[in-house]
Length: 552
Image (cartoon, rainbow, N blue to C red):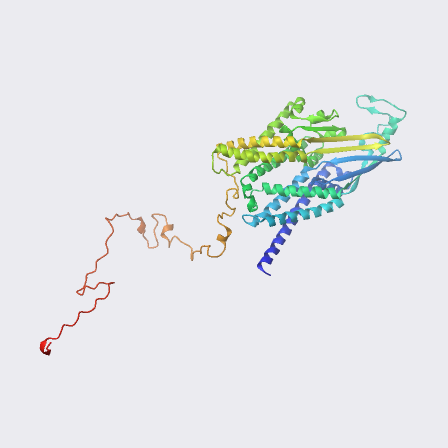
């Protein structure tokens, strides 16, 4: 096996393990939250908890279910139950999205300073494929039948009324007796009716919705995970998009945590605390994230009727009780309850917090506070223009239910509520720019600007390396380590002034003495031959000529 094939095999194993961990943990957590919420609501008393849990998880990730049913009353058949459900339990959705995003972002940290584009696509594709496979299994399992006892409709029988005989009691009018020739007996007979409401998951629409959901979660993760690498062409996002996106994500999750804390407080003083907690587990983000666009002056339109009015908080239930479609704004709600203006104040503080976080996570760079505030406002405005319409789309709800007996609607309920996406985009940009500028100026004044910027945003790798990877590989670019560790006993430069050395004295503590100048080198005396050390050799003198006559 070559080095290339071994690296590919290791990368493939890493991709598979990451996908398994992200998808399995997310589905297990979503199923646990859904089952606990349904159990606290008492839904498992009417049907099997397993299929209902699967159906709720499918709804949470963008799926769709088809309800159907029939009612048997008076010994006759042919009655029908008509139900429409278009609402996502965002408490389950948020749990799965956070787990998928956390595991996916952590898996990218081992790719170095920049993750290759092909590897990023492969990792996202592995997560998406495995997610759709498990979603297909839930779509197959999410079909069941819920049986509703007619006695729970509140239409008591004669026996239940204390043996007073047939009668019809209307709230506010009292018992009007045998009105309509025995009609009260027939209505009271609904107490013995049994409604079988079935539901099944639409596989095709659910898989398509699940694909959109998982791709959106992965994209948001890439834009908001500040400490995960990106492809080299996306490096600018570390300094521009990611600080604003991560700040908005943080404040939105924090708002959900505050909503859950408020639900716990409300459950402690409620007569049915289990129902309050169950509804909070499934739908706390629905209520909180619906209030954020409303508090930022995004107009909503809705209508409600029947028992679903009891699900709405005051004064929204009073405004929609008229039956016709109503425009829901902060001003109209404040006419019924002046404290609603506190919602706008809370949402403004939420955006200001996002602005401060954006400034703290954005590098200062060059330029003054005004230029820095302009950059923060620009990118937070762009993030707000995308986030606020997503909140409007995610919290849009439409629920309708009716039990028809012999062509007469015995029970009816409906709820439809949603906002305008274009208006939400415009207001999100305006609020984001204003909050970004104000938060950046506040961060500059307090010294928090750029203090929480990620290493990638500052141009530094998380491991502290500033040179290319080649500089840290074994080779000629890597400095050789020392042959031994330096100690104070052997290195005088590691000892503080005045410390004694190994010889017992400190020669470096003596006062410094000045010298008049450099000492010239000693001069060597020249010999008789004039030869100096280092000079060329001198040849010996010639012999004198012989004396006349042959004598020396």
